[in-house]
Image 1 (spheres, helix red, strand yellow):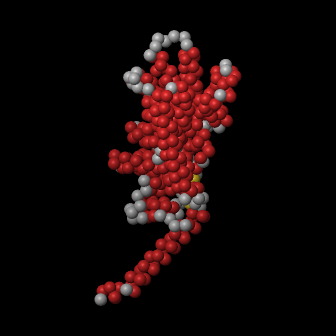
Image 2 (cartoon, rainbow over the protein chains, first blue to last red):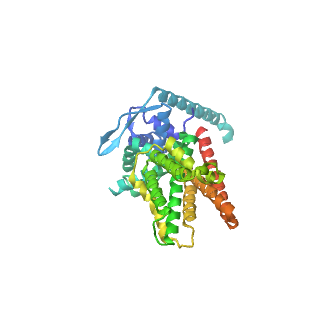
Image 3 (cartoon, chains in turn cyan, purple):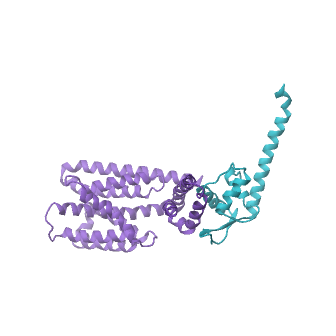
Length: 109
Length: 274
């Protein structure tokens, strides 16, 4: 399963432990160096899909600072999908880096 | 507080089921993510409106064609009742109010209309069937065998049957009576020369077309209502040669509404499956 950057970083945000909606948005922005800015609408659409595919599990709702929240936790299937995607990206990066290095002399010449 | 109100209004883009399950949670995230500036709040609010409309389309595609078409028949019943009530009121306005069978019919139509709008589909369906049987068939036992009577009764009968056996599952809410306001405005504002019933159907059909991207049910309901009007006009057309224009208009309108609504429904379900 290939993940798009918003899904990839939203799931990656949960690697270190359960987070609520807005915390996922902030963590995804941190992990992607600010490149992925999840809007609320996109976030909940992604979470819905991840819940339907059993990649994450939702906790019970609770109230904090007057706002209703719910924590989302990564499931083993979610970790596996993330690991596969990270490996695919690393392989793709390695292939391109390798080709760039191999042709660096030719390009300079 | 104002932001919370605006957020709640924007949240209405989501289907009722989603709002009930996680509406408060989504609202909390919108307010938190939109806290830094008005621009951020507008961005977050806009994102939930778009996501909500997309969710509606997906949700309806998941529901399945049968339920959507049954819903459309229930909506068509409301439209048909509104059309009938507007027509009776329009004709009564042109002559002094007097005790006539039309006034009784108007009272029954309005009572059924209020029932279906508030959310009592099954009760309205059963009463509607009983009313049709009592007025049309019991008073004239030969009526059921006449093709013209059956053609006129076809749409109301099917609508009542669908409401009785496959009603929409929604909790009663008297606030839906606000939908009567456009019909009352049409009767009050349009000049006598204009056919108010047709004007109502045209107006609702336009709304149905506008709602197509997220919900094809109203467009299907309009197609059903136009078919009902067309079948009623058959009787008039056969007795008066000058009524054929109305018949062509209603036939064309019902065909167009059905075509665009079913095309959209098919597209939504195809997109959902891929």
